[in-house]
Image (tube, rainbow, N blue to C red):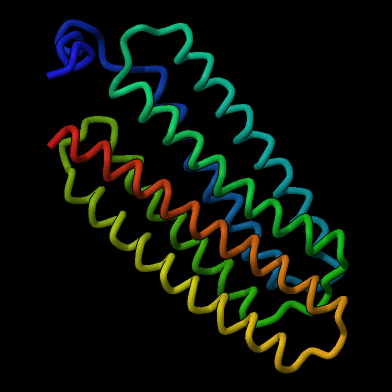
Length: 214
């Protein structure tokens, strides 16, 4: 038992960190939903979705900042300080990469959205939803199996995203003749695939927390 675990018996239930985790997960899901809806929307409507994505990403940045402030002010934390830092940072990294994908589509004027881009946004949305399920169980850490099940699903989705990404890049090099388009699509696909990698990073942190409390 760590010193932090010992003190948990004598302090009120955490009212600072868990609400921040839940807010972060909720905004992450909204961002992922908006990105998936955006790539399926008509070109004329797409900018509206990209603007919303920027707003959600900014909210997540603020939540990350607030979490770091709480860490600096509070001696007692619901679980290890390094895990709190790693969890909020890994969630923020998922958002950063989905935002990056949207920004690249907007900046490079990627009007024709491929099936692979749509599939990757769908995979990332599903992974973010599982992150939300796992985060909801952190509050009391009573249903550890629900967390580990969510983590397993996230890991499978990350492998699926790798396969979709690799096939899409191969198809681009085989069928696309315009070098500019190759660069555009490759960068968008890379950002989306990295977002799925970062979802797995969130899963890794969650699994680490579960191991420490099982």
